[in-house]
Image 1: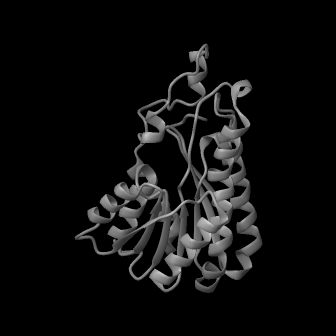
Image 2: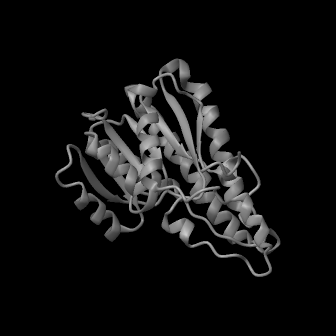
Length: 249
């Protein structure tokens, strides 16, 4: 399939996990992808992986946690691509702590990257996406839908991403722009594999975040993102696709 032939795509968090797989999947379907991450070396490796695909990946180092950084990311991508058809916001961070032990610094950092960063990327990209009648795919989480222990800042940030996705869909639908999200559960990525129980935590609460079967794969999430961002999903707007192995069922 080449559903993205000629399409101009910007993917954040593109150096690893879901972001990496999404950039490669869209390039494999013909897109020209600007992949952004703070990890320059890993990002260059992803761009090299795209050699031989029908599309291409251009690596751009950038930080979504600052307004100037986001302006540089979007401005540079639009200059590189000559426009923008799809924005995929994957960049995010996660830590595990008892809520009463979370510092303001930790809270602010997670909210800034996951929620404010996603907002800034959307805000700066909107004029270009409205011009192309393009679409946005945000990465939410099962933590957007139900209580997830030991992740108060992450849960708040992802709940905000889900609400923002629905707001943007309503606000800009009549102008031809779509905005949707994907809510992964436990996925086999570096961010998930970094999990460890906080000291004294009740292991029974793991049932709140564990799938009934095996962990999902980043390739599977990338496939869902590719469908949502494609013309096949042209009537999907303001939707969230939960991919969690029946964790919340």
